[in-house]
Length: 488
Image (cartoon, rainbow, N blue to C red; front, side, top):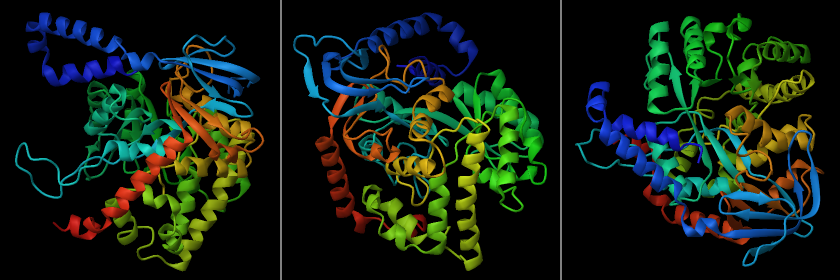
């Protein structure tokens, strides 16, 4: 897979800690590479299974988009072999009659929980809170999300990805970004240009593929981080720091690749007019900066600022770990100390963000679908379905909506040679739908089954996985209380 070389780099980093030791152990490194390559290139026999999707309508999502009717798609192992071939002997046949095949969806903004402790630990002691990786990934794959972009990854994220790559977990591909912030908080903190450049170099060496910029960075450090990231081949995505208030245009330095929220623009709006949205679009257009609007994020912020009722009755809440459910319902920062004025402001932002989408479409600025999944109210997988509906309502055509979560996202991630469209040779990350999403993007919800890395998961299997997750979450609810956990 695409991340093999990256995993090798991380493995070597933890095996040999400095260049001197690596030089004296060259033979062992060489042997390690040979063994790694040999074991990684051998796919289990089960991965070489051949599947034929017969008489299916294929929406390739190429540019220009092509639709093929009543064709037979052949999949062998993890990849698509052909779109119009004959059925090989022994192939498993899936009836695609009157169904629609699209590329798997990509969520360009997620936060994946990782294990943590509430207090000091002795060496070798396990964390207090341990998350089941399959439980985290199940809601994504059940909704056809076959790739995710983790915008606040840590060392455990590499382990989660490795478990998926090994086949121990059924889950989406994961792209990982290291977050760099300023101020005096925790994590990667950089308050000078020198610290910023070093933080980028550290992230690159540790194996991260992208850099996320955060809100407390000062202007000088922000610019140096972006420049250093570009030198190391790392794209940048993130917030527009508060240091640019009143000077928004200064944030659009060369190689600032993507703004992570429409909210990053609305923070700088004076009258929330369409003219302001157009001005923001032209700033991004001129700089070659893309946008991930995350419309669903502000919808949920506004809902929770008004009341927690919509969260309490959210159908997808049952698929969220009970501890996180408890946090969302008892320590909700959006609802805490809310005022009618604050709630009204968030509602105004919801409307303005739709205008931003229309203005960016008009200016032909590329937009990709992201959700901020993991933040209060935003459930992985289900939230991307919601986001696509909101993008269509904001003015994107069904095809443009689909492109935002397939081809365009794959292009931005640098994965377009492997995923994002349905073409021979690409990974079989696919969704089989019961109705045509080009008629209405909301038909993406009508899933007959999902292929992930060539593995076929029929709708009944996906629903059974969700049902089992819900049952176990409900059974363990009484064991998790957020306020008691953090007070330990």
